[in-house]
Length: 241
Image (tube, rainbow, N blue to C red; front, side, top):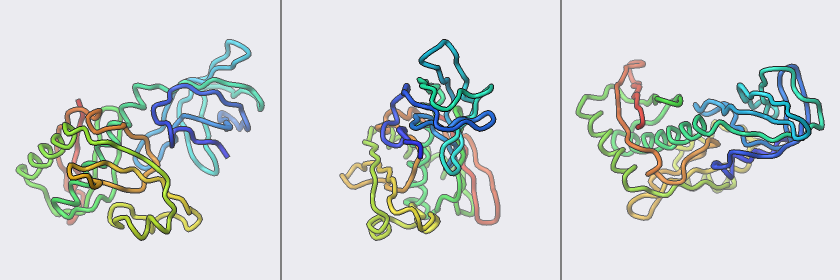
């Protein structure tokens, strides 16, 4: 099983690894910093370099199935090859900023509108979030944007850690964590926690994505639109600068 370095060290850009499996245009490494697509966050891209030669491979996508597969632009290196991986940092950091801002938005919508997040999708230059709510007014959107930017400006700490599932189910808000959707085989849960102004967590939820270390790194948030996705569901679109 590949050691997922990105779960603990989201700021790491370069790593060394060994090819454990090669299948068609994909390789499995013994360890990786490349994030695989999941949870509304696209995968990382970047480059793999052979340590014994000048050969390089472009990582065009990363997928998690039974393990983590790195999709390459050409025939992969053979099993046992020692590689150095370089993550496209601009792409990764954009996803980290958007994913953390999505957590803030989800917590804010639940607090202010009792609107539970039902889905989200992040990109490098925009994102959207779907939630259970009939319809937001222009005044609602302006208020959401203002409160989001207050949370960003406060530069609250963002942390992530592992918690055993039994404790997580007993102590965390089920509307935010949705732990019941996880397979029973998952006994340890990765928690992402954003500190609040009163010392208590503003948001604490299960998530395997990558995040910035404090909300100040998100930058300014602009809510650019809304869309009705059903009789009781709204989509909020936003960008960061």
